[in-house]
Length: 174
Image 1 (cartoon, rainbow, N blue to C red):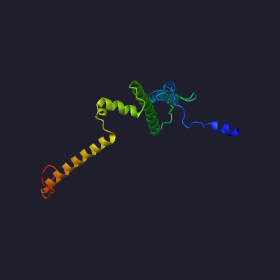
Image 2 (cartoon, rainbow, N blue to C red; image 1 turned 60 degrees about the horizontal axis):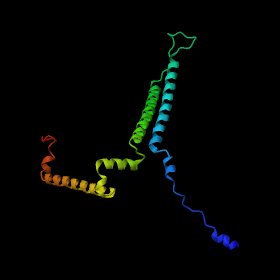
Image 3 (cartoon, one colour; image 1 turned 30 degrees about the vertical axis):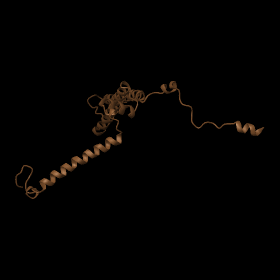
């Protein structure tokens, strides 16, 4: 009897079952992640900026026991400039994340493959039926032909090259 049970037993499948369309659509797209991440990053950068400005304002208020004319807060120009640069960089990076995420979301681009497909479809490149490798080879051939034409022109001008060595760019003697 133990033989019968062991022959009927099947090992578990190595491949997981394919996801249903509802499971695939429940995943958050990269464009939405970038948009939400950029928004959160912008909120954090706004808090950092606000905190820095509040600290700077509090440093200008004189302590209670000093007169306003004698109050001179310590100033380090290099550190203030570095802090301003850092805050500006963080703010610009967060706005760039929001912009890129919003554009990706608006144009329904989820990754580089979608971007390539949309760009090539708009340019009409996709309809040629050529692969990327063929296009790269054609471009290489074109560059080689252009460089060959240039060297031929230089060889033709090379007969007069001895005379041209003593002339400047304007054709006058050096």
